[in-house]
Image (cartoon, rainbow, N blue to C red; front, side, top):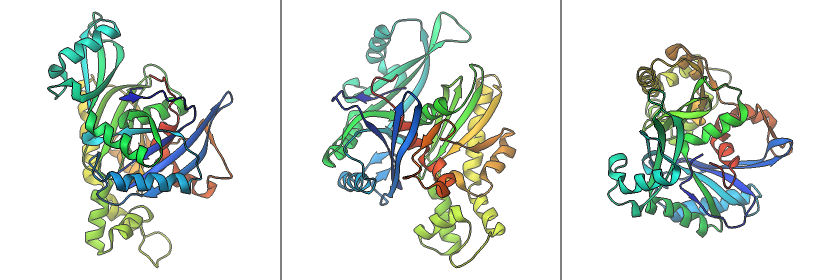
Length: 360
Protein backbone atom coordinates (compact mmCIF):
# COMPACT_ATOMS: atom_id res chain seq x y z
CA UNK A 1 0.00 0.00 0.00
CA UNK A 2 0.97 3.60 -0.52
CA UNK A 3 2.18 5.76 2.34
CA UNK A 4 2.57 9.51 2.35
CA UNK A 5 4.48 9.29 5.59
CA UNK A 6 5.95 6.71 7.92
CA UNK A 7 7.63 7.59 11.21
CA UNK A 8 9.54 4.77 12.87
CA UNK A 9 9.03 5.69 16.51
CA UNK A 10 9.46 2.19 17.90
CA UNK A 11 5.75 1.60 18.42
CA UNK A 12 4.58 -1.87 17.49
CA UNK A 13 0.86 -1.63 18.21
CA UNK A 14 -1.21 0.44 15.82
CA UNK A 15 -4.88 1.39 15.62
CA UNK A 16 -6.86 2.49 12.60
CA UNK A 17 -8.46 5.92 12.93
CA UNK A 18 -10.93 6.76 10.18
CA UNK A 19 -11.42 10.55 10.29
CA UNK A 20 -14.52 11.40 8.29
CA UNK A 21 -16.46 14.62 7.97
CA UNK A 22 -19.31 13.42 10.24
CA UNK A 23 -17.58 11.04 12.68
CA UNK A 24 -14.31 9.35 13.59
CA UNK A 25 -13.99 5.59 14.05
CA UNK A 26 -11.30 3.67 15.90
CA UNK A 27 -10.48 0.04 15.13
CA UNK A 28 -7.88 -1.99 17.00
CA UNK A 29 -7.01 -5.08 14.97
CA UNK A 30 -4.84 -7.72 16.63
CA UNK A 31 -2.78 -9.92 14.32
CA UNK A 32 -1.12 -13.18 15.30
CA UNK A 33 -0.13 -16.46 13.60
CA UNK A 34 -3.78 -17.60 13.80
CA UNK A 35 -5.00 -14.57 11.84
CA UNK A 36 -6.63 -11.22 12.63
CA UNK A 37 -9.37 -10.16 15.02
CA UNK A 38 -11.06 -6.86 15.79
CA UNK A 39 -10.40 -6.21 19.46
CA UNK A 40 -12.04 -2.79 19.73
CA UNK A 41 -14.30 -0.64 17.60
CA UNK A 42 -15.65 2.76 18.58
CA UNK A 43 -17.31 5.66 16.78
CA UNK A 44 -17.88 9.22 17.99
CA UNK A 45 -19.66 11.99 16.04
CA UNK A 46 -17.62 14.87 14.66
CA UNK A 47 -19.21 18.35 14.62
CA UNK A 48 -19.92 19.80 11.19
CA UNK A 49 -17.11 22.01 9.92
CA UNK A 50 -14.19 20.18 11.55
CA UNK A 51 -13.39 18.36 8.30
CA UNK A 52 -14.46 19.97 5.02
CA UNK A 53 -13.87 18.03 1.77
CA UNK A 54 -11.05 16.10 3.41
CA UNK A 55 -9.33 19.28 4.67
CA UNK A 56 -8.90 19.84 8.42
CA UNK A 57 -10.60 23.15 9.24
CA UNK A 58 -10.73 22.93 13.06
CA UNK A 59 -7.59 21.35 14.53
CA UNK A 60 -8.59 21.83 18.17
CA UNK A 61 -12.01 20.30 17.49
CA UNK A 62 -10.39 17.21 15.98
CA UNK A 63 -7.86 16.92 18.82
CA UNK A 64 -10.69 16.99 21.35
CA UNK A 65 -12.53 14.20 19.53
CA UNK A 66 -9.39 12.06 19.19
CA UNK A 67 -8.91 12.30 22.95
CA UNK A 68 -12.57 11.39 23.45
CA UNK A 69 -12.55 8.32 21.22
CA UNK A 70 -9.45 6.85 22.86
CA UNK A 71 -11.08 7.41 26.26
CA UNK A 72 -14.45 5.93 25.23
CA UNK A 73 -12.74 2.95 23.57
CA UNK A 74 -10.59 2.46 26.69
CA UNK A 75 -7.64 2.15 24.39
CA UNK A 76 -4.15 2.93 25.65
CA UNK A 77 -1.87 5.06 23.50
CA UNK A 78 -1.16 3.45 20.15
CA UNK A 79 0.42 4.57 16.93
CA UNK A 80 -2.34 5.87 14.65
CA UNK A 81 -2.91 4.78 11.07
CA UNK A 82 -5.21 7.21 9.28
CA UNK A 83 -5.89 8.31 5.71
CA UNK A 84 -6.45 11.30 3.49
CA UNK A 85 -9.49 11.62 1.25
CA UNK A 86 -11.30 13.97 -1.10
CA UNK A 87 -9.60 17.16 -2.21
CA UNK A 88 -6.73 16.68 0.22
CA UNK A 89 -4.98 14.09 -1.95
CA UNK A 90 -4.12 13.72 -5.65
CA UNK A 91 -4.07 10.26 -7.24
CA UNK A 92 -2.67 9.87 -10.75
CA UNK A 93 -2.10 6.76 -12.83
CA UNK A 94 0.66 7.11 -15.47
CA UNK A 95 2.53 4.88 -17.89
CA UNK A 96 6.32 5.27 -18.13
CA UNK A 97 9.33 3.51 -19.57
CA UNK A 98 10.64 0.62 -17.47
CA UNK A 99 13.07 1.80 -14.75
CA UNK A 100 14.00 1.00 -11.16
CA UNK A 101 12.39 2.66 -8.12
CA UNK A 102 15.28 5.08 -7.47
CA UNK A 103 15.20 6.32 -11.07
CA UNK A 104 11.42 6.61 -10.93
CA UNK A 105 11.46 8.66 -7.73
CA UNK A 106 13.98 11.09 -9.26
CA UNK A 107 11.93 11.35 -12.45
CA UNK A 108 8.71 12.13 -10.58
CA UNK A 109 10.45 14.75 -8.50
CA UNK A 110 12.26 16.42 -11.42
CA UNK A 111 9.31 16.34 -13.80
CA UNK A 112 6.45 16.61 -11.32
CA UNK A 113 4.63 19.21 -13.39
CA UNK A 114 3.95 16.59 -16.07
CA UNK A 115 2.10 14.33 -13.66
CA UNK A 116 0.92 16.39 -10.68
CA UNK A 117 -0.60 19.88 -10.27
CA UNK A 118 2.27 21.15 -8.10
CA UNK A 119 5.05 23.56 -9.07
CA UNK A 120 7.38 22.75 -6.18
CA UNK A 121 7.70 19.18 -4.91
CA UNK A 122 9.46 20.48 -1.78
CA UNK A 123 5.99 21.46 -0.54
CA UNK A 124 4.54 18.02 -1.22
CA UNK A 125 4.54 14.55 0.34
CA UNK A 126 4.33 11.95 -2.40
CA UNK A 127 4.74 8.25 -2.98
CA UNK A 128 4.12 5.79 -5.78
CA UNK A 129 3.49 2.15 -6.46
CA UNK A 130 4.56 0.23 -9.55
CA UNK A 131 1.56 -1.76 -10.75
CA UNK A 132 3.53 -3.80 -13.25
CA UNK A 133 4.12 -4.12 -16.95
CA UNK A 134 1.76 -2.22 -19.22
CA UNK A 135 -0.69 -4.57 -20.94
CA UNK A 136 -0.09 -3.09 -24.38
CA UNK A 137 3.63 -2.28 -24.27
CA UNK A 138 6.05 -4.55 -22.34
CA UNK A 139 8.76 -1.87 -22.46
CA UNK A 140 6.56 0.35 -20.28
CA UNK A 141 5.10 0.05 -16.78
CA UNK A 142 1.98 1.39 -15.07
CA UNK A 143 2.44 3.56 -11.99
CA UNK A 144 0.09 5.06 -9.40
CA UNK A 145 1.34 8.31 -7.89
CA UNK A 146 -0.24 9.87 -4.79
CA UNK A 147 0.55 13.29 -3.40
CA UNK A 148 -0.65 15.80 -0.83
CA UNK A 149 0.59 19.18 0.29
CA UNK A 150 2.75 18.98 3.39
CA UNK A 151 0.63 21.61 5.13
CA UNK A 152 -2.43 19.34 4.82
CA UNK A 153 -0.52 16.28 6.07
CA UNK A 154 1.04 18.26 8.91
CA UNK A 155 -2.32 19.61 10.08
CA UNK A 156 -3.50 16.06 10.85
CA UNK A 157 -0.17 15.13 12.45
CA UNK A 158 -0.29 18.18 14.72
CA UNK A 159 -3.92 17.57 15.73
CA UNK A 160 -3.07 14.00 16.73
CA UNK A 161 0.03 15.13 18.63
CA UNK A 162 -2.06 17.71 20.51
CA UNK A 163 -4.33 14.83 21.52
CA UNK A 164 -1.35 12.89 22.90
CA UNK A 165 -1.14 10.43 19.99
CA UNK A 166 1.38 9.79 17.21
CA UNK A 167 0.48 9.21 13.58
CA UNK A 168 2.67 6.41 12.26
CA UNK A 169 1.16 5.92 8.80
CA UNK A 170 -0.99 8.10 6.58
CA UNK A 171 -2.67 6.05 3.87
CA UNK A 172 -4.86 7.15 0.96
CA UNK A 173 -8.60 6.55 1.36
CA UNK A 174 -9.36 4.69 -1.91
CA UNK A 175 -6.65 2.12 -1.15
CA UNK A 176 -7.77 1.35 2.41
CA UNK A 177 -10.69 -0.85 1.33
CA UNK A 178 -8.20 -2.57 -0.98
CA UNK A 179 -6.29 -3.73 2.11
CA UNK A 180 -9.51 -5.03 3.66
CA UNK A 181 -10.56 -6.72 0.41
CA UNK A 182 -7.20 -8.45 0.05
CA UNK A 183 -7.43 -9.82 3.59
CA UNK A 184 -11.04 -11.04 3.45
CA UNK A 185 -11.93 -12.04 -0.09
CA UNK A 186 -10.83 -14.81 -2.44
CA UNK A 187 -9.94 -13.75 -5.98
CA UNK A 188 -7.57 -14.62 -8.80
CA UNK A 189 -5.28 -12.35 -10.80
CA UNK A 190 -7.87 -11.77 -13.52
CA UNK A 191 -10.86 -10.98 -11.30
CA UNK A 192 -12.07 -7.39 -11.13
CA UNK A 193 -14.05 -5.91 -8.25
CA UNK A 194 -15.28 -2.40 -7.49
CA UNK A 195 -14.87 -1.10 -3.93
CA UNK A 196 -17.06 1.91 -3.13
CA UNK A 197 -17.07 3.95 0.06
CA UNK A 198 -20.06 6.28 0.42
CA UNK A 199 -18.94 8.71 3.09
CA UNK A 200 -20.65 11.83 4.37
CA UNK A 201 -19.19 14.30 1.86
CA UNK A 202 -17.23 12.15 -0.62
CA UNK A 203 -17.86 8.90 -2.49
CA UNK A 204 -14.68 7.02 -3.32
CA UNK A 205 -14.41 4.34 -6.01
CA UNK A 206 -11.49 1.93 -6.36
CA UNK A 207 -11.53 -0.72 -9.10
CA UNK A 208 -9.13 -3.57 -8.29
CA UNK A 209 -7.93 -6.37 -10.54
CA UNK A 210 -6.26 -9.28 -8.82
CA UNK A 211 -6.40 -7.22 -5.61
CA UNK A 212 -4.44 -4.30 -7.13
CA UNK A 213 -5.92 -0.91 -7.97
CA UNK A 214 -6.34 -0.15 -11.67
CA UNK A 215 -8.75 2.80 -11.50
CA UNK A 216 -9.82 5.30 -8.82
CA UNK A 217 -12.23 8.19 -8.67
CA UNK A 218 -13.64 10.41 -5.92
CA UNK A 219 -16.63 12.70 -6.30
CA UNK A 220 -18.13 15.22 -3.89
CA UNK A 221 -21.61 13.71 -3.69
CA UNK A 222 -22.34 11.41 -0.77
CA UNK A 223 -24.40 10.74 2.33
CA UNK A 224 -24.90 14.36 3.41
CA UNK A 225 -26.79 15.12 0.18
CA UNK A 226 -29.30 12.39 1.10
CA UNK A 227 -29.56 13.61 4.69
CA UNK A 228 -30.18 17.20 3.57
CA UNK A 229 -32.90 16.08 1.12
CA UNK A 230 -34.63 14.12 3.92
CA UNK A 231 -34.26 17.08 6.26
CA UNK A 232 -35.93 19.43 3.77
CA UNK A 233 -38.77 17.07 2.78
CA UNK A 234 -39.73 15.86 6.26
CA UNK A 235 -38.88 19.07 8.19
CA UNK A 236 -36.64 17.34 10.72
CA UNK A 237 -33.26 18.19 12.20
CA UNK A 238 -30.06 17.05 10.52
CA UNK A 239 -29.52 14.50 13.31
CA UNK A 240 -33.06 13.12 12.92
CA UNK A 241 -32.58 12.95 9.14
CA UNK A 242 -29.35 10.97 9.63
CA UNK A 243 -31.23 8.38 11.66
CA UNK A 244 -34.14 8.34 9.23
CA UNK A 245 -31.75 7.77 6.32
CA UNK A 246 -30.84 4.32 7.62
CA UNK A 247 -33.85 3.36 9.76
CA UNK A 248 -36.39 4.45 7.15
CA UNK A 249 -39.11 5.30 9.65
CA UNK A 250 -39.99 8.45 11.60
CA UNK A 251 -39.86 8.66 15.38
CA UNK A 252 -42.77 7.08 17.16
CA UNK A 253 -43.60 4.58 14.42
CA UNK A 254 -43.08 0.86 14.30
CA UNK A 255 -42.35 -1.53 11.47
CA UNK A 256 -41.21 -0.72 7.96
CA UNK A 257 -42.46 2.19 5.93
CA UNK A 258 -41.68 1.00 2.40
CA UNK A 259 -42.94 4.17 0.70
CA UNK A 260 -40.70 6.30 2.88
CA UNK A 261 -37.72 4.01 2.30
CA UNK A 262 -38.26 4.13 -1.45
CA UNK A 263 -38.34 7.93 -1.26
CA UNK A 264 -35.01 7.88 0.55
CA UNK A 265 -33.64 5.58 -2.15
CA UNK A 266 -34.75 8.16 -4.73
CA UNK A 267 -32.68 10.75 -2.88
CA UNK A 268 -29.68 8.44 -3.34
CA UNK A 269 -30.25 8.19 -7.09
CA UNK A 270 -27.82 11.02 -8.06
CA UNK A 271 -25.03 9.12 -6.24
CA UNK A 272 -26.03 5.89 -7.98
CA UNK A 273 -25.97 7.59 -11.37
CA UNK A 274 -22.50 9.00 -10.71
CA UNK A 275 -21.30 5.54 -9.69
CA UNK A 276 -22.80 4.13 -12.90
CA UNK A 277 -21.06 6.79 -15.01
CA UNK A 278 -17.73 6.05 -13.31
CA UNK A 279 -18.01 2.31 -13.95
CA UNK A 280 -19.13 2.87 -17.55
CA UNK A 281 -16.06 5.06 -18.04
CA UNK A 282 -13.84 2.37 -16.54
CA UNK A 283 -15.34 -0.28 -18.79
CA UNK A 284 -14.90 1.82 -21.92
CA UNK A 285 -11.34 2.82 -21.02
CA UNK A 286 -10.17 -0.63 -19.98
CA UNK A 287 -11.67 -2.63 -22.81
CA UNK A 288 -14.92 -3.76 -21.21
CA UNK A 289 -13.43 -5.55 -18.21
CA UNK A 290 -15.80 -8.11 -16.71
CA UNK A 291 -16.60 -7.01 -13.14
CA UNK A 292 -17.17 -9.84 -10.67
CA UNK A 293 -18.73 -7.82 -7.83
CA UNK A 294 -19.32 -4.40 -6.33
CA UNK A 295 -18.74 -4.00 -2.60
CA UNK A 296 -20.17 -1.02 -0.69
CA UNK A 297 -18.85 0.54 2.51
CA UNK A 298 -19.74 3.62 4.53
CA UNK A 299 -22.76 4.53 6.64
CA UNK A 300 -24.94 5.49 3.67
CA UNK A 301 -24.35 2.08 2.06
CA UNK A 302 -26.94 0.73 4.52
CA UNK A 303 -29.86 2.54 2.86
CA UNK A 304 -32.84 0.30 2.23
CA UNK A 305 -32.51 -1.63 -1.07
CA UNK A 306 -29.44 0.35 -2.21
CA UNK A 307 -27.42 -2.79 -3.00
CA UNK A 308 -30.32 -4.29 -4.95
CA UNK A 309 -30.87 -1.04 -6.83
CA UNK A 310 -27.20 -0.73 -7.82
CA UNK A 311 -27.09 -4.41 -8.82
CA UNK A 312 -29.87 -3.75 -11.30
CA UNK A 313 -28.35 -0.51 -12.59
CA UNK A 314 -24.85 -1.92 -13.06
CA UNK A 315 -25.86 -5.48 -13.93
CA UNK A 316 -23.26 -6.64 -11.41
CA UNK A 317 -23.74 -8.40 -8.07
CA UNK A 318 -23.62 -5.66 -5.42
CA UNK A 319 -23.47 -6.18 -1.66
CA UNK A 320 -22.21 -4.62 1.53
CA UNK A 321 -18.57 -5.29 2.22
CA UNK A 322 -17.99 -7.85 4.99
CA UNK A 323 -14.88 -7.23 7.10
CA UNK A 324 -15.51 -10.44 9.06
CA UNK A 325 -15.18 -13.09 6.37
CA UNK A 326 -11.69 -13.90 7.63
CA UNK A 327 -11.32 -11.43 10.49
CA UNK A 328 -12.71 -12.49 13.85
CA UNK A 329 -13.89 -10.10 16.56
CA UNK A 330 -13.89 -9.78 20.34
CA UNK A 331 -17.39 -10.86 21.31
CA UNK A 332 -17.01 -9.27 24.74
CA UNK A 333 -16.46 -5.82 23.23
CA UNK A 334 -18.27 -5.97 19.88
CA UNK A 335 -22.08 -6.06 19.99
CA UNK A 336 -23.01 -9.15 17.98
CA UNK A 337 -26.61 -7.89 17.56
CA UNK A 338 -25.27 -4.74 15.88
CA UNK A 339 -22.74 -6.55 13.70
CA UNK A 340 -24.59 -6.02 10.40
CA UNK A 341 -24.68 -2.26 11.00
CA UNK A 342 -21.05 -2.21 12.04
CA UNK A 343 -19.75 -3.93 8.88
CA UNK A 344 -19.96 -1.07 6.34
CA UNK A 345 -19.35 1.66 8.93
CA UNK A 346 -16.22 0.07 10.38
CA UNK A 347 -14.75 -1.13 7.07
CA UNK A 348 -12.33 1.75 6.51
CA UNK A 349 -11.16 1.83 10.14
CA UNK A 350 -10.55 -1.94 10.07
CA UNK A 351 -8.67 -1.61 6.78
CA UNK A 352 -6.46 0.99 8.43
CA UNK A 353 -6.06 -1.21 11.50
CA UNK A 354 -4.66 -3.98 9.31
CA UNK A 355 -1.72 -1.83 8.24
CA UNK A 356 1.77 -2.51 9.58
CA UNK A 357 4.83 -0.31 9.50
CA UNK A 358 6.87 -1.17 6.46
CA UNK A 359 3.91 -2.32 4.34
CA UNK A 360 3.98 -1.32 0.70
